[in-house]
Image (cartoon, rainbow, N blue to C red; front, side, top):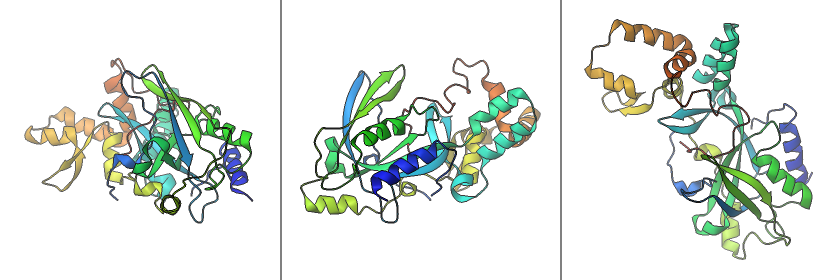
Length: 302
């Protein structure tokens, strides 16, 4: 089966309910391709080349599952330990606890803690070729209106392997500002095929890059994610040599009240519900922007 056929098969499977489950990182921003528009820019077109699949892979697109949460005012994605490693996950546990109550309001709240499907693909940013291979992560969209759907629409039209190093195609990514978000509006391709590069050394370097998404995106441990689920921000505690909640660290100099003790107990059992109650009067409710049909704006890789 050709790479084109494998990509089409993977895409069709992603809309048939099938899952393709295929330490600390050094965060060099050169490793990430993103579609966030700078302030004051309403639209921009970026040209990329999708790299051939890594050895042992059938398509260039890798599937991962993660949880989306606003931390310190910014949306971030955390790979799910349960889906990716078969380990305990605080997000999944919070979701299960809420669903177990049988209450409609808790079922709705539980959606915030569901794992979501993402795609990761290695690309070359034609405007920044000197920075080498970049990783692009974007959300799966169950309404078939997401980035992957737009990419596959372009691939299905040309009906050949766009990753071929000699006769592949670049992709033009049109990004527009939609409110506060930067959204991929469309994906198109040039009429002519082209080489990945006329420089054989670059072709070898880019094609033989063996890194995976786990090399550039954090797969955080249980304790770190537990702080996030509680609604706190992880900070490094030099004394304890571990991550601790920012609020917890600040409270070390203050004797906790009886109310604080009871709140901690509640957070351990049903952190999602407590967090919702704490933010109900906020102008930006927790429940906003967490559905499966969010816009496909980027978040931070860590």
